[in-house]
Image (cartoon, rainbow, N blue to C red; front, top):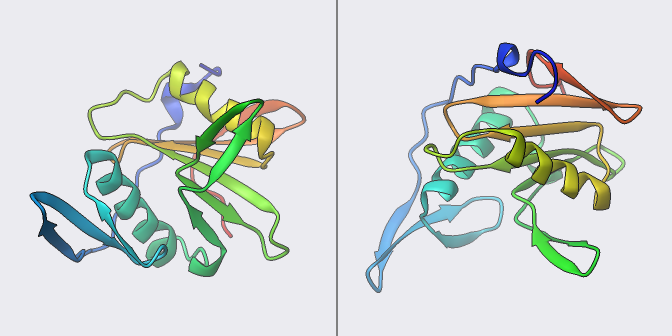
Length: 152
């Protein structure tokens, strides 16, 4: 991990959130407001939906500039990022990797984010498991840990 990695956890104060949830064919589904679709409610999806609410309602990121679970190519591999926030010129600005709560945010998760950053270069990288959140600014190929998410 970067120097000071463990010292820079960002506290996320999630807003009250009453998601639309339903059961269909024995599966629990949650309605994703951004994708306008019912999504299987996995532990990771729960984190993603709550973090999206935080980005929009608390941090003030414009919902129309946020993409969820879009495909990118890493060489010959096709991968899906969790969240990308674009700037007002529609340039990728931030990648967010969401993990379920029991997954530790470690070097492996950071490496995954950095691989996504090769195909989709952004100035800000964020990883969260709903409980913990770490953010970095990518400055001249060096990661600088942040003590809070960047203002939009």
